[in-house]
Image (cartoon, rainbow, N blue to C red; front, side, top):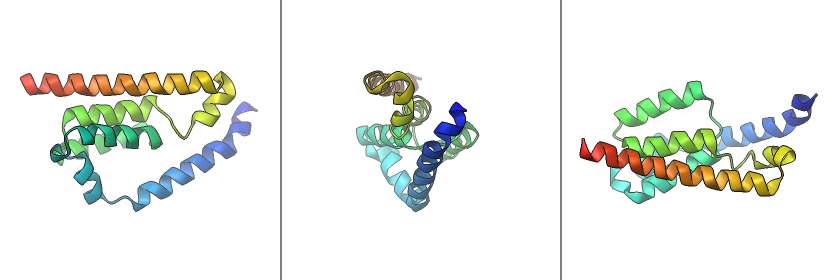
Length: 128
């Protein structure tokens, strides 16, 4: 019964995200995620990952395509971590169970953690 109650909200969120991702071209994505973007690439990857709702069976191959296109492992790490741990659009659903204060705090801590892990990945790959 809980799943049926959440279904309309979940479907509307997925539809909105699908529409947004349809209008973002691959060229623009590489412009903001490429190595030339610097720190902005990490922030952009975190924002996209926090907003998007993409299943794992799509996100991991997408990360592979981005790596082949020249996106650094640090940026990919931030993208995947925020994609899986941060959910801006799903906060209303999460708040029904945990409350808004805990949901927002959890998302902020997950975002900080993703940025730290991305920075560590960039550091590790820069010294090897």
